[in-house]
Image (cartoon, rainbow, N blue to C red; front, side):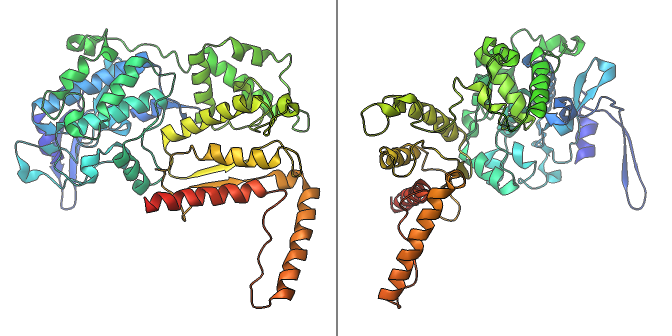
Length: 457
């Protein structure tokens, strides 16, 4: 099939096949030399996929759009569009060429076509996963995934395994970072429609013409794009990367025993002066480099170093049953995190930390535990759950308040002994969770109840 497709296609953004020959065991292709490397390698910065700025991404995507439009005009589907199947060509000014047509489909001649279930999981549309007949819209879905990947450094539906990725694709939910332009968000959302008929351009052979007319490609002269010069990337050479390097170096040099404080911190002042979009990009770079979680970096993006504890503010002294009016502000911040969680719809959720400030026996302890459970109830019930529990709450406070924990263990031991003495037929159980760690057990039970109630519904 690949030989037949390449023999029929002649386009400046598609690799050229010059000759084929074979021996007793192999078929050989003599292809055009492309020496600029896979597009995927151009998304990397120090070994991490970070993505590209929109001008450079638009340049590459215009090449892809032209090649796919040409294929569709010749009644052919690629069916495995992805950055690994796009190669930069140095002698054409950095333009792309499509490669690897082993899974292509000729809609005009079906005798050489293979099965419907082909492609790479992270770029396969829902209809392919369901083993339905492909249409031109199948390539449009993959094109949408590539737009997303070039701008963010990651694919929209990656799930850690092929099976989980398929589930995410079929669900159709993904997260659009704040730093993306409105035009980019609109293009992605119109391409990643679960119903092929609703995708930008629909299922017709001229679907790509609608994509080329989208505002995202404003300023691209498609008729003469092959003569356009590749724009210089502003992303990897931007001041934000220098800031990332300085932040990482400062965190490596920081004494972990010293209290965390940003007072007089020059880098923190620089972060404060950034626009909301640049702060979002900065956090994206730190996350993709897998260092945003470090204790000296993550708090820099919040106005207070109080951490995630609810009821931590000075309003603890106010006369209400949770710790004062500041609780509303802190719970609102927590709900913002839940909002992001709900938007991304992960397959599994683990919430770690001591999320309330009051200690066991404090005036507001019980009320804060209940209020925290109510906040957890805002987590979307549609999440898939593991082992019957969709959310695990781990309370690390037992490590910080060892004295209270030891007292409770001693009390539990006494209660268990009393139980065993009064009725030897009843198995020993842990006493009801009263002191330190109560929020852990209650929160976990609360979520389990939510899951069960959802099942009944």
